[in-house]
Image (cartoon, rainbow, N blue to C red; front, side, top):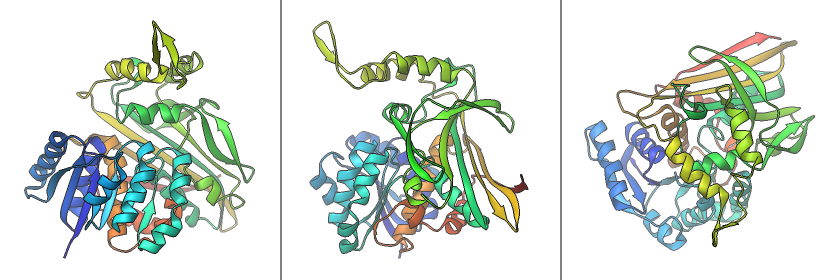
Length: 389
């Protein structure tokens, strides 16, 4: 007997997650749910065509309606949310009411902390709720735990991640790879990190640094953004000295985007324009969605996780490196694959009963070694190394 999975949101990442679960999740059914039935049906048709069997089914759900969501999740073993982060708290409640395991792609730590407040309800329903399961937050944090376990004592953890077009000559060296709402959420506000063993909040778009990465990337820049550390600074406070996250971009992106940010183009406070109250961020989204709309341009995803500490009395660095490119066979982008497949792994582990009940942070919910073994079944290459410092 296989499992019945639900995916809420039939967009880019949702479709890729459905494909992964149908292929490797021992699925009897993968139900793709969206407010737009045509989008859900197109996604289901694509998955079925890729696999040559009718495992994916389309359905309608209003993700902002808790009771509607709870109804469609009845009878499902596990659900993955691939909709914007601000919908995930009520969707967590809906899944608990339906007796269905739940995880999401997350991206906003304040929402995640509210989800973790549902621990008592989730335990009573004997289901697990695991937020922030994409690439970063998500796989990056699991690989951090993997690196920490490889050392006798971990001291400093540095996560660096970026989704980029392979063509670096596009405007600002970028193209749309996931929702604009998610992107500007990362670019704005405060980031939670560990410094000197204590949780701190720091401004985004600070601490610009230069990195040298494997070809075809070479020299890139990285800077503080929010969400990538998820709950790990709280979990590992007092255990490691440093835990931080920076987004990787091509040189020059930081300077141009920081200007937009400093001038208020990503603000959320309403401004009046010719008698209309507008949110600058909405205008920015509308404009940049056109500028960055280059679906024909292949992408890549780079993730580097460095854990520094002590092993056998020596100071060492454990490095995990993922460099993924768009898949010409399936058409899934690197961002879709590296975001959706890790979340699908968690979804399958939940359905299999390998995640404890309750609302649990990813770094506590999923065994890092199990995750790496499951990742090895996908065609996402993970390189690890241990070197002396």
